[in-house]
Image (cartoon, rainbow, N blue to C red):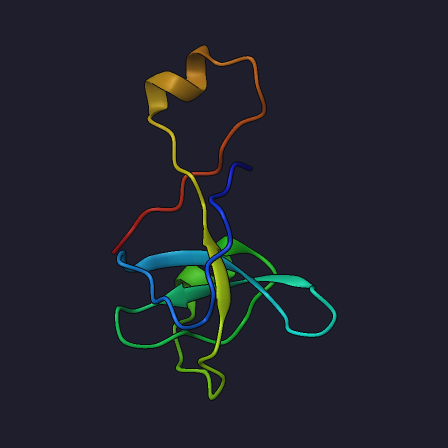
Length: 88
């Protein structure tokens, strides 16, 4: 899966969608949904984060975006597939 650079918690995402997040201290990776106003709880998969959007008490999140590909790009590419996470 292709991802963007890491962004600090002070920087909020522009797009409403699922992002990969890093847990402070141990650096474990999870996924959270950004609603445009708050972060959801953390989940193990992007699809879980997309389907569950309850507000988390923890809002200081270090995050990075998941790079999306167009269907024509992913079909032509011999590189690993990029998971497409639809925005709602």
